[in-house]
Amino acid sequence: MKDSFGREIKYLRLSVTELCNLRCRYCMPEDGICKKSHADMLTAEETIAAVRAAASLGITKVRITGGEPLVKRNVVSLCRSVANVPGITEVCVTTNATLLGSLAIPLREAGVSHVNLSMDTLDPDKYRYITRRGELKDALDGLDAALNAGFDKLKLNAVLIGGFNDDEIPAIAELSRKYPMDVRFIELMPMHDGGEFGPDAYIPCAKVLEYLKDAEPVGQDGVAGMYRLSGAKGRIGLISPVSAHFCGACDRLRLTADGKLKPCLHSPVEYPIKGLNQEQMAAEMKRAILAKPPCHDELSATSRSHAGRTMNRIGG
Ligand code: SAM
Ligand code: SF4
Image: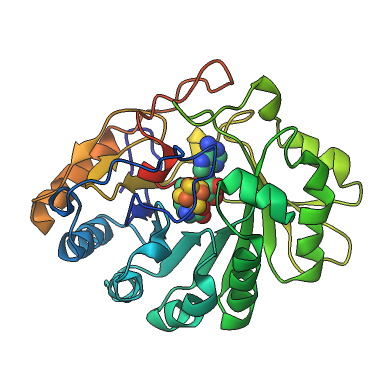
């Protein structure tokens, strides 16, 4: 269905857990989160009822996210159930890839067509630093497994952090030359308590092009401006939520693991659906879609997101 500003809402970002095996400094507090009672989270049945409700309103694409979706024990069967919902034509997973080594093939067989994996550095020490605990090798094993699992589309996302990984832009971009995979750079978003980053950390995506002299523009793919390095198998994507927000093209609704519909990532407005039946969920989804604002407030190092949650509790 269309929102009040004529935008067709086709895409549900479905967070299936707030928990994560990493603690990325821009996303999650070091001591994790206050683990909620099971009873506060959507059950698997409620989650699938919500996807059915979304499909009844014309949503065709679902992205399973988190927290880290792959720490959830029933993630494969959940993906299979989502893929089996009539009207859902695209099931995507966003993951830090550290558990993808053993899960890539089961997810593919369950009907997952697209995988986005997050990797901000190719340096093992920097990886350990930014994730506060992760091992780069696990993520690289996950990437390898994903490349071999035959997904329709694979993307690697790196959050651009000035003074941390801007010196790695050429090396990260090179992955798109080597592998049939898009490499996307995403501007760091200033979440309300998202880490200890100073103003210099917030660098615009345009900076990427200063490092990639042979990048040719090849159009737009969703919210990403696309480029290709000469002879590359994949493309480079630049996603600029801070320097050039893409609210005018927003086609998404978010559902958190604790059952709150979020019309806008950067707004505290939420519509609870926990405990509702499918029909009632669809009615709340309509309300949430019609409540989508035309645009979020300005974001900058000094003007932080009003999301009211850390990113692991939203889903990105
Ligand atoms: N754990 C999975 C992962 O890391 O891919 C899925 C959840 S994570 C919240 C989804 C995406 O949000 C990741 O690509 C992550 O890098 C991104 N993200 C988290 N906090 C962010 C921030 N403050 N600014 C920009 N991107 C952020
Ligand atoms: Fe976990 Fe993903 Fe957040 Fe990193 S970005 S802490 S992997 S949820």
